Image 1 (cartoon, rainbow, N blue to C red):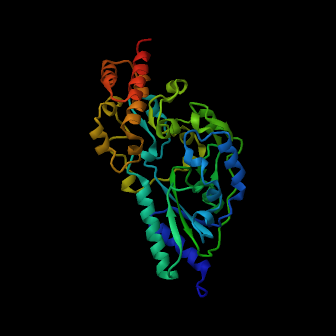
Image 2: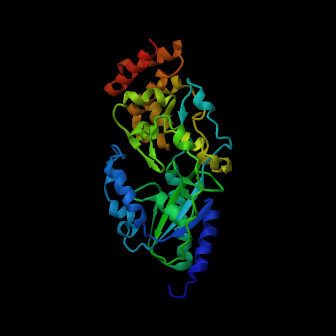
Image 3: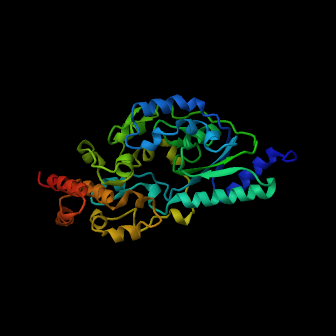
Length: 350
């Protein structure tokens, strides 16, 4: 590889990446030591909740070279997924409809981005010859936001999301670990200033301080990662959020710069952007599996899906349709679902 112009190659990689549908690409080295103490503190305070995998392999998270031996650079990419410019809370104000986090309304992004990263690697190989690489998309012990921040794709905001001055935060991240000695890009400065809108709007007060999230209080964690009963103290605050929560992004001033995607895979399926809670709750398990095929939603399973919707129905308007739908859950084979249904029905008796 001694005859390769790596500066030119880095420029070509960014061009090829754009042609593959990534909105931005940047390159960083593998030194994440500056993030190590914060990670250890977060784990030590048990803010990761039941996400046991977050407490393992910390050395590999902070040293990509340990995760994939030979790695000296990480090619970081981002792909926009927003389907609308307006960052509206309107759906959250319709208590009989389901709020599903924007990222999960379309097809699962993991396969699409991983496939594009593989295509990027193959393009690099055509020019540079065989080289070592491995693609990651929200998988394995990878500090993807730290890598993206270090590469200059944005800065980690007070809501722990990666923020970009030209695109806000409605985008996915992916990484290509490589052994190519590519030139690295510079980080950007932080631009949250004195704004605390994201922290203030959180329905469950999940932010301990700036850039520190107690996942155990976060609605995204409660509805997606937690596999047990959701603590009653959070149920009213959950409102109609049945899969994830976007409040800290919807309120963020930087998302006025949201860029829309033209990726068909990210378009809402099954009216996930405008659907009645009762319709979702009455899905049979086979309907759930069929309609969430290829979706990020499927991984929580049918019981957690109904658990989440039961809470939302408990927060919904007291109509005959809502009460009737909830009563169908009283004979659920899942004790967890039954407990949440019983709670929801009590909300309509008060």
